[in-house]
Length: 392
Image (cartoon, rainbow, N blue to C red; front, side, top):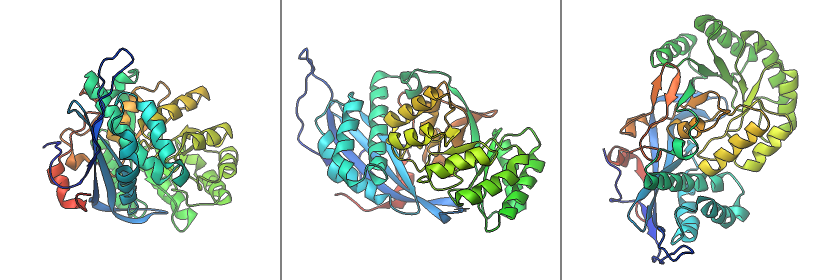
């Protein structure tokens, strides 16, 4: 397995500009940025209540190389469609504002990227593109320092409680229970299942069966993927309350902050939300309104590691635990540095098949690696059949 810079792909650079600090000493600068876009088939077709059938996910990788020849790796993703736009934004608009800049000034570079794309989005595609670059920059910085990211970020605890994030809305009951047994054999001590079927009574029946199968004390979450109105969510939450869920996730659309407040106050269950919030300010609105129990950023769409850390700190300032969505092999570093962390999601879109050393799970905990940076080494040869497009 290898992480190289050859072959086809988007690989853009601008002329190098020597850079120096205030003492006159040379500093390492961004030399080039390469992006690659892939459509990655999933081993099992997955389903949820809003995205429907999910046969593959879209992946964009970003490799930032500095003037000393060192490289950092980042990535972002989308469900079914839209990720190619992230690559275009990185290529056409972010690379020019990064090239020649000091690679260690991650906050400065984040602000340059944010304002370069601000008028075009303030979130969504813009922050997904920024996320991939920001992750690569932090990886590069930590590799240069010879430290794993979780230590560079403060190093709270490398053992992070983890749950298995099932994407299983259309699984028959027996398949759902078999999956739960497999998760437990893999070392998970908490599980999330999907809800949001055509009838809320079906959801209640499926959660009841899972609770009976797992036992009273096993941590269980349910994820509606924004399926319901606030009134529907309240009704279903009340019906699910007897099953002692850790949380009900995304009960309604992320735009409905007032609806989230009602669900949390009237539904009788804790609420997790945030995978579809794309800025720090959206999290501030949700948290200060009292609309969420477990803020849930995704490092690949919220603005990267720079913003994820700010969301975790914002949650801590409001005495809230932080959880996460997706990209567990990256997120484990962020959660390992957050004193208010709770369960981290191990996501169904995992890249284990394309990684030299996938994340370890031991007795219900994900273990943050000691390798420099985030420690991921992609097998780009294995990904190559799924790459879309060529050199730009």
